Amino acid sequence: MNGTKRQITVPEFVEFKQQSHRISMLTAYDFVSARILDEAGIDAILVGDSLGMVFQGHETTLPVTLDDIIYHAEIVGRAVRHALVVVDLPFPTHLVGGQSAIVSAGRILKETRCQAVKLEGGEDQAGTISALVSAGIPVMGHIGLRPQSVHTMGGYKVQRDEERLLNDALAVQQAGAFSVVLECVPAELAEKITKALDIPTIGIGAGSQCDGQVLVLTDMLGLTTEAPRFVKQYANLQDTISQAARQYREEVQSGEFPASQHSYK
Image (tube, rainbow, N blue to C red; front, side, top):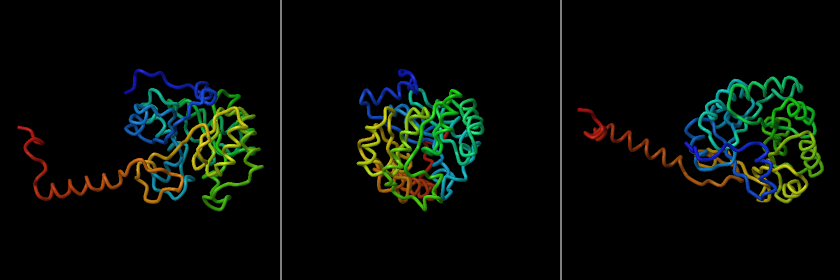
């Protein structure tokens, strides 16, 4: 594990914007992945409710429970020594009032080793963000496409309402969020929002001018059958794993594995 670097704090994360340090962020849901990402120097690891789709096999993120997210966040937290760990507040834990959100986010911070929570919403969630921050819980906002509101939004669509998105971003900042994710926002609009804010913007399908970028790990590694357009696949592990499994099956069937070097005397 990376014992040479101190863990990034929320204030240091915010300062990355002034330092023109482009922030790298990836999702992780298990110990091995989180350890590898942390040792690779990734700035932030998100334990996202995307685990509902890529880990649990659901069609949306909505079925993910608070207990689910805490289970995965606690595992990820054991592996991380350097990155800032942020955990999604799952649906609908932050939508039923500030007090409920504090209880849910408080459980996450108490039962895991994360430093912050992320919640979806703009102006409509400013009061909840403010309540969390007042309770000493760092909050990363999330505007644009909001997967937890997929039914309201009519699907996974690019969000183009400039006035609403700018108002959402400013409301999230005013409420005390230390950063905000911009998902599926046109690049020019994301750049305008980034320049309007003092806090870092983290883009996913929002162009190159955000202060940082986040991707779902399985998309980036080529483990997803149909990745969104905004994903760049840095590896094709689906083919690698499939080939390894086929070779293993064939060697077991032929008796080639295990060989003498794989056996005890």
